[in-house]
Image (cartoon, rainbow, N blue to C red; front, side, top):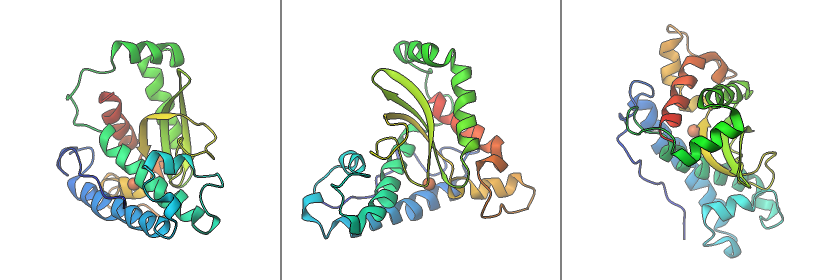
Length: 214
Ligand SMILES: [Fe+2]
């Protein structure tokens, strides 16, 4: 069965003013759709991959289960589909929740010291990612960890340095914040090489949206 673009669980304008509606529309309907189209094109030639869920397909990235001919396409576009499907779900409008559950709060305190420390380390991981990639909060064997991955890699993939089940994921590709960053930078459009570092206030805003939705 072919992979398909999931519906957003909110309107394109729901995350204003942190993420503008146009950025959300382009990000979801164009960028994410492209990952879906490309991963479908890659796997359709290999019946043994037909029917694999996104988690299983990503777990196979970096192993011999993915034919060499499509390894790069599955890594990038299968990763892109998995990452974005997750990203839409972990964001929410500010004020829409009461913070982490007691169990999660306890795990955060024991792994990082406090929720504020988690925020600081998560933001630092996002800002330190050179070029395009993602920052992650993951759980593995009962331990929480913060990491980042390049491009569309993710902690689910066998090749990830820090493996785990994602609890938060922050997209630090320019396409996630480009239009907003342009406004923040006083009419100076960001250059292709610029990353989240140059629009750090915005990255803080977005990760705050996600942390509030824990
Ligand atoms: Fe993205």
